[in-house]
Length: 151
Image (tube, rainbow, N blue to C red; front, side):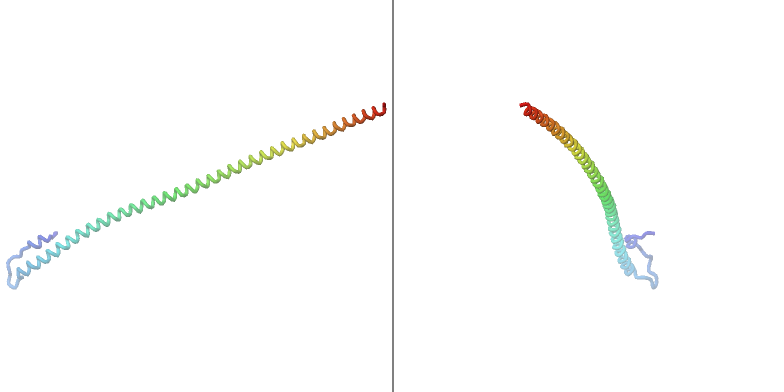
């Protein structure tokens, strides 16, 4: 059975027996108990409200903590993805640079081979020119010697 402060204040006791209690003392005591109980009920209500408020704050903080953890994990994933993408991009840049370098070397080797072929052709032409010039000079020398011998 739940007793309220009003129940205590309205409590009545039956007549006074010999050697019984003084009704004024009982009423004063009941009044004091009722006031104390009223204060305790008020304090209990305040404590319950405070507990509810703290529970709500705890729920909010728990939610914020969860959001913060999720945000941190997302940031960590993004950072790892960015690192992986940067690694892939750097590997791609290196591969492209190596390919370009290979092309440049191949082109340079092709140009060297072409120049060597042209140099050989010019040398061959020089030898042929020298041979033909020598033959022509020999021919003129014979013609001059044969003309000198006839005169």
